[in-house]
Amino acid sequence: MNSPIDTKKDYQEYVNQKSPNSPIWRNCLNAFLIGGLICSIGQFIFSFCLYKGLDDTAAGAIVSIILIAITAILTGLNLFNKIGKIAGAGSFVPITGFANSIVSPAMEYKSEGYVMGVGAKMFTVAGPVLVYGISTSIIVGLIYLLFNAQAVLV
Amino acid sequence: MQKLGKQTIKFDTPPTILETACIAGPKEAEGPLAKYFDQCLDDEMWGEKSWEKAESKIVKETVNTLISKSGIPSEKIEYCFAGDLLNQCISSSFGLRELNVPFYGIFGACSTFVEGLQLASVFVENGINYAICSASSHFCSSERQFRFPLELGNQRPPTAQWTVTACGSAMLSKEGNGPYITHITTGKIVDMGIKDANNMGAAMAPAAFDTLMTHFSDTGRKPSYYDAIITGDLGHLRKRYSYRLVPECRI
Image 1 (cartoon, rainbow over the protein chains, first blue to last red):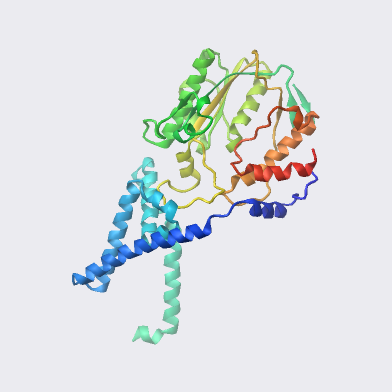
Image 2 (cartoon, rainbow over the protein chains, first blue to last red):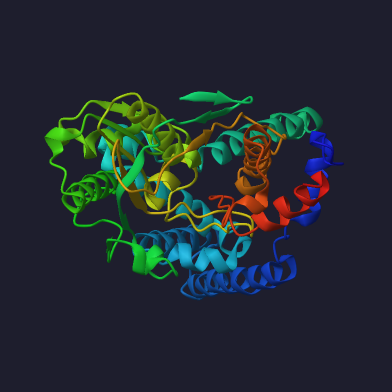
């Protein structure tokens, strides 16, 4: 084979150059619009709760509960993946993405049974987020403790 | 049967592809090949409870269609080569359970069908009268096995491929009027280091190209000898990759 693309590196570069990129501007715009819409809905619920006399913590919890419930229902109706295909990060980054990533494997693996399927595989997508999210928060907590030991202890 | 060059076998009494059968899913039914399929499904489940069961049913019904189209009773079929994408070839083994024919479960991912054809043709060349080869896949079951749950709202990059929902099978016989399998060239593993699971076309193109080039040099033929050279499974971006590879070898 007497071609210039003989090495893996050359081929990798060639493929990168020839492969179409994701439509990044369109994806960003869609993510901005739909992500913004989801956050606006959240803000609307939040303000409504405050108006009804709840405090900030309770209102925040209610926002999470409602958005998670809506996502779970939309996932169950096979609609959320259609939204996600357009919205991308817009629906994945808010709490809706997290809810979807737990409900979808639960549905997918139901055919393997409730224990070894739903129970064992529910966290296949969200698991890494939980592991590194919780680990990071512990590390951040330790750093906080280190620099504000006095404040915490007192 | 004689060996030509490095990787090619030439058959003295070429096996005939006596009959073929194919059942395909709803997305495939929208494509330009729909009129060649024996049956197109309206939905991916086909009345079954799981996608894996649906895939097994597709395998079973395709082979039944093949047997009834060919008119060869299943007792006369001596060997069966079949494979799919799932763990332990479950679609093929459950689908062909009732066939009662000696069974080789094979795995070659995208090359499974041709792998089966090659093995079956070697058997037929060496005295077997009838052999079946079959390959199947199902979009939903392979998404689940290799990627993410279908309900997950994620985006696919433009290079991502879509696993076909279908089963194809062929009956090879010792005697017949063609089409014949005259030569087989088995490819090597060619790994050019593509790590992107969403760009399998680029990962496979070098192997397809290498096999074609070896076939030409083993048989002493030129591409112009053929009416058509068909490679599958490289995705709609294959042209971009292989066209660049071909002219540079000055064939």
